[in-house]
Image (tube, rainbow, N blue to C red; front, side, top):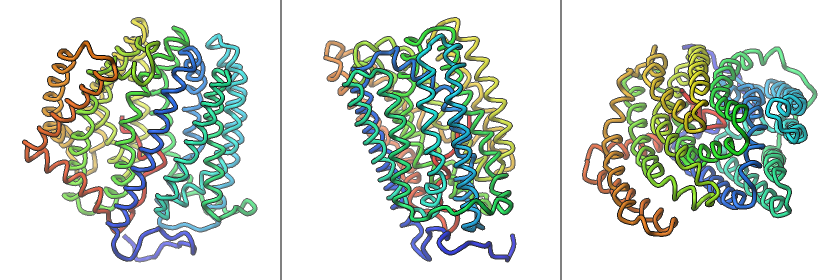
Length: 514
């Protein structure tokens, strides 16, 4: 610790009041959840419409292009938005330098993505990928202009503005995509959705943040921020690459239709779970960072939050897994029912990931980003190898390989992540005990309801399954005082906040741990 006060230019102070920090964080969490769930509702509604207007082949073609862009996205930010949010010392000169770095990187990435279309077209045997990639590359030029504006809003805890920005951009881009799909533009409806989301998002951020960049300067003073972002970028890059490898392998060794089924099953399952994890992660990393000097509270806060997260998420995954066929038919349509087995297999991975991804909270909050990067590299090797082994059995084989990999890496991930922290390897396992028991009870109840109501139409059967699962979950929680207490403690952690570093962990709501 040092008594030297960090240099912070006027206008760059954190958005923390002198008192009532908990109230500020509570409002922020409310806006965070509202923004995330509004965007999710819009995306879900749009998916239901587009799934009936476009074919699996068209979704698969877009997925082929996105296998590259999702990886490239890790370089678009370079971890510099997180550096601005987390930095105790910050000047406008540094922000200006980071803006120009992000802007130049955006242009470079845009050109790279555009040119990559030729290689992807040859790799997949899909000539249309050339112009799809050229169009997607244009979005990077605009996205690079908004990174620091978004970081400034995060630093000031202006969650309301961020929520409005994300919802507005998402709504306008989805409207554009639906119009394009009705016009018969095929895969270009998905391209338009991607581009308009970037354009509208950049415009809203520039309107919300009055700061404007000046001539390029201040690069030497920004070295420490660049160093901070590099480890985060490396970790996220390998983690993202491994998560996209299944799409690459399926697209290369099977066809666009199979890839379309796989990606829609994966996104339909994981999208609602991200809406739960993202707002919580945005609070937990800064909260744990502030508790590093209080090891017992650090450990207790982590374990309580993980337990509460598991209580809320695991039964939901079980309900989705049992009702997979009805979920697919209701939200995507009958033409997608072949994705149901994949959906169920991936639910096993999601069940485990609800807890395993919290390892990232430990790595970042403790400052062990080098360890985080090394683990991401090792885990990506294991994950990609499992995909290669599984592809011979089709998309179901890839899904099984992914699920097995997530289970196998669970304990090793925490053995590495907990090293040098107050948290023990057994803590996340113990935090899962009651949620797993309750989820098992929910599983039996939903299976029973499905057997009794099998003759109902898909939407009626799905309603019955969800209602049964939620009712049994609520009853089990009510009857088990310890479970009630764990959920209550999660809500308390969310509300409490701390008097320092109470800022979001990053644009994605925190890093994945495995």
